[in-house]
Length: 132
Image (cartoon, rainbow, N blue to C red; front, side, top):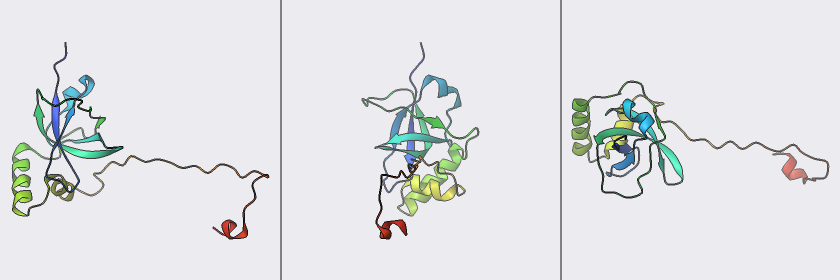
């Protein structure tokens, strides 16, 4: 039997809240504070930072993390304490603070690709549309 594992994640959003996610069994060996994770958030997926690993949670219907993005942590627990101090001092959410401190390009995006269909002979466009 595999023990349940959960993580608290700070997201790059204007909120001081942390969000709890379940860690699937196949990712539990990779979990560490300071790693980025790709998590479901509303109807999208967002990049967040693991700030705490916990063994139990009283919350119901906890969503699992989708992916761990880093092989090595981007910051340590002592770094996190300092970053939390910075966030508190400047009254800025920790998730946004971490996103500012981590080098650019740290945010993984969830894209939806739109591909136009080929134009067929039975479709007629007005001249103004054809200029687009």
